[in-house]
Image 1 (cartoon, rainbow, N blue to C red):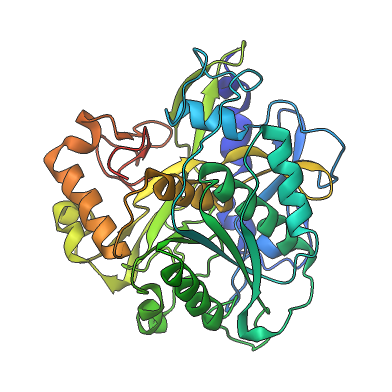
Image 2: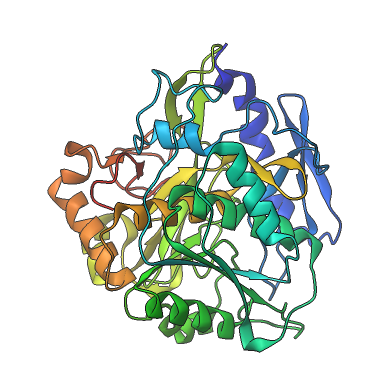
Length: 404
């Protein structure tokens, strides 16, 4: 059977996290199953008022093992599906082993908490999949090492491993921040970390910043959109894992490329069949606070007077990561660094997110986004998925380095 049919009724429900994440539970919880394996939501991914959350979940178990999990997507299998490298027909996970070799300038990842084994974990991930060694630096926002937050270490491993896998020649920075302790926080990690990340990328030849965390939109968010405007930097953010109609910032910012989540369908032989959205998957919404940016005038008939997102999408379930052992996770926390790395490896450094988004929507408006083969239009998986831009996956998922 196709992998999709084995999990659609289960996973479509399993990953409808909106109602669960709004429950306010402070404990890790099981939420359904996937191929007979548990889906576990870590405490850091539980949304609570005024606190940013991560956007990942464990698949099967949160225990890490000596060998990569069977059936989890790899850098080679994803790069093959997205036509970034050559590979065998069907891009089977076990035999699609060619990995990207590009990358320019710099990539900065922003996360909360120290990650002591970051360099050695990244090296182990690279060695497993034949990825060139990273030019990797950990930076403490404000100059002080933050404490370790266990759930955020998983986030950090996912972010640095996949951003580097997609653009191994780019300099890689992990900017670590403290968690906000105020009763109501407008960012978490800190704005200082966001500013530091933009500065690092700008000073190292330009490139991209990826933010895999999010917070429910708030009226004052427009005051903070200025933080995503460092020269020569394109910012990316996860749109969330709670389905359509659940808002998230910084993904909602007009100065950020919002990355939604999709799913690869594979047949019984492991061959890629197609890519789709499904109800309760990656996040999508129309912002109640951010006015429609000029570049989205082409979709004003859909979004009205306010910013719609995501802009693009990438596979979000499920992948292997290394954190002193191998585990399997999913979420738009995977989608954001993956897409950011793909754009970096395309080599056409943008002056700003606004420039990049203006180009994207111009290509969409002219019809070239699909005609050129640069993007795949996600039209199935939920009634909201339509031909062209939609709240499921924005313009769509990547194909080749064209238009990136």
